[in-house]
Amino acid sequence: MESFALKNPETIKQEMDQLADDMAEAKYKYNLLESNSKVIFAKLCLAAKNEFNCSMSESEKHAYVNPEWKKHIEGLATASSEYDRIKAKFNNYVSYVEYMRSYISAQKHLN
Image (cartoon, rainbow, N blue to C red; front, side, top):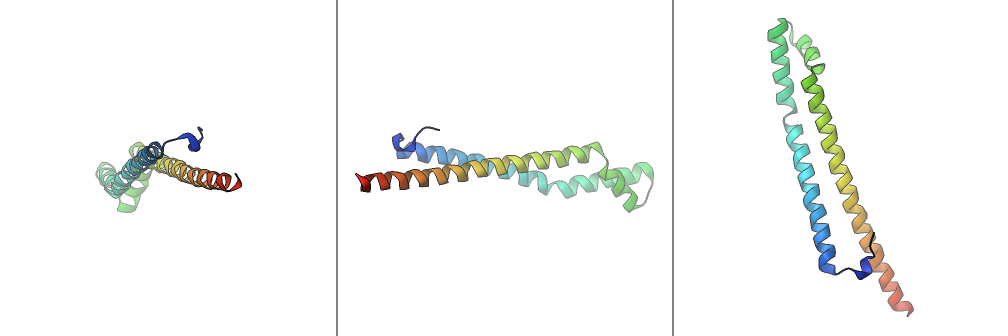
């Protein structure tokens, strides 16, 4: 990583803004998938109930093993992981900026 001491504060702000935008987009994607979980599960239950002419509890069992449900859950996990990765990157960036600020300040007092 390039030294922050050599970067323009506006450049640092732009990079942090970009990370914040990426984090917001990742959170949006996760929330969108999560908010549709109940709808997708209900749709799969209803389809299984109609197809197998079974009880609701048995239709839930069929819905849980449905490839469409598996795909949805994998998408949720991926979206959550992406959000966590970007959030960690943003937090690391903030920590490093604070470290460099303290380091530069200490160097000024030593000289």
